[in-house]
Image (cartoon, rainbow, N blue to C red; front, top):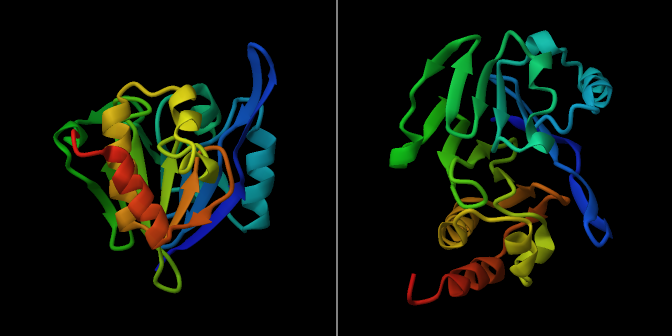
Length: 210
C-alpha cells in the first residue's frame, strides 16, 4: 500500500470582479514509487521543498511528477524534479524523450501495484486522475480540477465557471471517479470522503440524454 499525504490544500477565492486568488492541492505519494502530484505555482518552490523535507523526502527521491493538467498553478515546480519521469496531462516524458501512451484511447497508465493514472478529460481535454490504493485499503483519487472542491457537487456552476473544455465528458468522469474512489483530493479544496449520496447525485447530473 502507498501513503497519501496532502502537502498543501488548494483554494480559489474571488477577490474582485475580474480577479481571484488560487492555488492547487499538492499531494505526495510515498510507496514503491515516490510521486508528487500538481506542483503549484512557480512561486511555491521553497514551500514544496520544506514540505517534502518534513516528510523525509528530497527532490532526488521523487520517481514521478504528475500534473493532472497543464495549467500554470499545477506545473510551477516540475523542474525541481529532474530525476523523475514527468506526466503532464496526456504527455509522458523524461528529459527530451516522450512516450506516446494512449490516454486518448481511454487506456490507463499503471505505475505500480498501488498507483494508476487514468484519463479524465473535461476541465481540459487531456486531464488525468491518479488512483491510489492507500494504507488501510481505501482508494484515494487525486483529481486536479475534475472536482474544484466538495461544494461543486451540489453546485455544479462552481466547476463549470472555473472552466470546462468539455462539460459533458467532465460530468461523466466525475461520476466515474466517484464510483472508483473512497476519498477525493480536489484541485482547490480539502479532501473529502465519497458517499453513496454523492455518487447518486453525480449520476443524476449526467442526465438521461448523456
